Every structure is written in C-alpha cells, then in structure tokens.
Length: 488
Image (cartoon, rainbow, N blue to C red; front, side):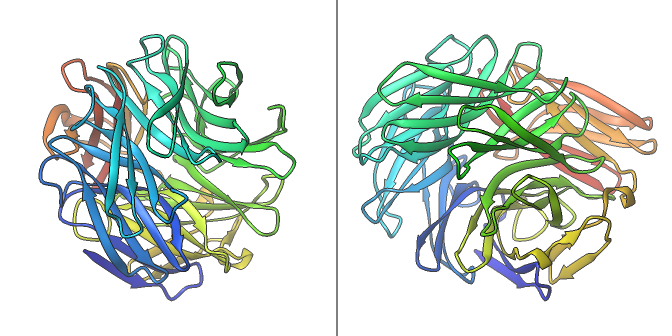
C-alpha cells in the first residue's frame, strides 16, 4: 500500500505514497499521538463499490501502521478529522450510501485503532455535505459545509451542532440566490465560532465570506471580501494573536489563472492587508499554519512549467504577509496539497494526493518538510532540487516558459453548467473529457485539432447526479486533471 523516497536536500526530507491502482484523495491530516498521524480522504482502489471513506495511520517516518475503509453501495468521502476528546477521532464529509437522498452530511466516530463506533447522517432529499469540522468545547462538534435541502433552495452555508452522540442540537443556514458554502471553522471560545467560505452569485462572480456566529443563536455577523474586479474564493482560516484572523484562498478573473491569496483582518473583520502570490500560471492556497517567528506557511498547488501539471506549492511569508520564499513538489502529473501541520520540532507535514508517484491514478501523498528560512528559495534565484522522486522547484516566475495549461473552471462548484478553459502555445490535437470518480467517461467536450490560443468549452451536467467529476485534458505530452463539483 505504501511506497516512499528520501530526499537528499534539506527542503523535502522524505515522502510517502499510499494507495492502489485507482484513485485515493487525501484532504486532511491531524496528529493522533506522539510522532504519529492520521490522514483522511477516500479510496476507489479498495472499496467494494464506488468511493469509500479511507483513513491511513502513519508513524513519524511515514510508515503506515493501519488503514481502514468505510462505506456502502454508493460514495463516501472524508473532508475533515478532529480528536473526539476520549482518545478516538471524529471524521466528517459526505455519503450517498446512507441517509435521506443525494449527498448527506456524514459524521463518523472511531476509536484509537480506527474501528468505527458509530456513524450518523444529516440532510434532506437534495445534496448536503460537511467540508469542515470543529469541537464545540462542550463535548460536541460543529459541522460546516453546504445544504441544498434546507435554506433558500440553492446551495446555502449549513452549520450543524451535534452532541457527543451525534444528536443534533442546533442548525443554521445562510445564503442568497447562488452558491454559498463554508470551508473552514475557528472555535472562538464558548459558543462562538468563525466560519469562512465563498459566495458565488448567479453571474459566476465570487466573494469570500466570513460569518461570526454563536451556536444556539440565529444572529449572524457576515463579512464579505472582494479582490478588485475579480473573483475571490476562501479555502482556509487561521487565528491571529490579537483576536483577528488570516484568510487564505485564491483570486483571479474568470477564465484566467488564479493567484494564491492571503489577507489579514482585525477582530472586527476589517481588512488590514492582503497579498497575492504567484506568476503567470495558476496558484491556489488550500491550507496554512503559523511559524514560530510570527510568520506563516501556506500550501496548496501551482501550475508547473513545461509539459506537466500541478505541483504541491509551499510559500513562506513574514508577519505582514511579505513573500520570503517558495518551493514546489511534484512530477509529471497532478500533485496537490490540502493540509499542512507542524510537528513541534521545526518540521511540517504536507498532505494531499499525487498522480506522479505511487500505484495508481492518484495516491495519498505525505511530504515531510524542513521549513526553516534556509529551506526555501529566495525571490530571483533559480534552483532545481530533485531527490528520488521528490521535486522542489523555486524558479522566479519570469523564467517559466509558456505552457499548455487548463484554466480553472468557472463557476466551480456549478449548477448545472460550467466553462472549462484551456490554453495552447501551438496548434495541436486536444482531448478534453469528463469522468466520474469511478473512472467512467460521462462527456467528451473536445476531441480534435485546435488552434493556438485560449479556448473554453461548456460542460452541462443537467443529466448527471450531483457530486465530484474529473475533467481530463490531453494535448501532446500534456495531461492534466481538474476536479469539478456539481451541485443540484
């Protein structure tokens, strides 16, 4: 199940992959005991039907101690894991095997060995998914994500508080006409929570959304943030020492590569500063962590130069958000980071999935990093570091050659149509096809010769079930896969 390599350079100390011949996608990792961690996501290699929720328990050196899969006849996926407070764990995501219909919020409780103690579903006839999970300080938990079953009839932010047995205590929806969802939670103490997400209007314009709420009450203080005339999508949230917060994600104009984004707000939600990071290609932040010197590490993925795809992306900034260095890690296919945690000894663990290494189309990928100031690449330097399958790249953006690339789907999530863009530096044959998560082709968007330049094509999911789909583009040696989320 696991394979690995040890890098000779100080930036990436080692990496491990976990998976089989199909798809394994990791979205979360937390420390479970001293020098041990638990990763969560989903697998199609080991499940009996469709996609199953999957946990992998690893030691500090990346060796896997055990793995567990959970599911039924449909699809299950884990987006978040937190300690349960009694030595076990809670995990949240979605299920189509159990519940009321479509996707339902899915909450599972495990003991320390990964044995499931109970599982619960929450939702209605339409799609409902948990994207984030946090303890409520009273033995219960707050789930955050979106609901199409409750609220205004469109996907709305859905917050659900449950007790230690999974029984519902309080529920709140928030949204307007369009798509609204929550992606991150901060517990502020007592019953107070801060929730970050995104609001996508019918026009496709997106703004970052931060809600201050008190569990058990219906009052909401909402803050929205824009990035000039472009879209702003929030993916992660981090507390600041003065009671304020940092908001991470990505910003950009429709059908153009996005830049990674970081903003700092005070305790009242007022913007203090914001920065974007990246070059001419796409960069997205999906996770961040504080460093011991008052700065921050941010991670996600970046469009790799040349005929390749996405690489894990790591950026270090100071307390004012000013760029210090960057590195990327990956190979010839898609490699993405979704969760970053420190170990307390100056190392950081970057979790996500890789299509470049491992056993199948995509595997869980865990990379151990030395994140000292000397580990990165200062602005303007051009360094390539390769160590037995782990690549760290720190070119300045000006040195990157033009490349074939896919542009971020807009809107995404979508209902029922979205536009998928791509760019060709020279004329050539292009194949752009949509697959479900079991690898079945559901649509052929492009299959033929196309001229050089920027193109876009519409994908209509009216006849498909809500869920996750994969857009796969091939053009010569270029292959890239992007995730699409269809909401109904």
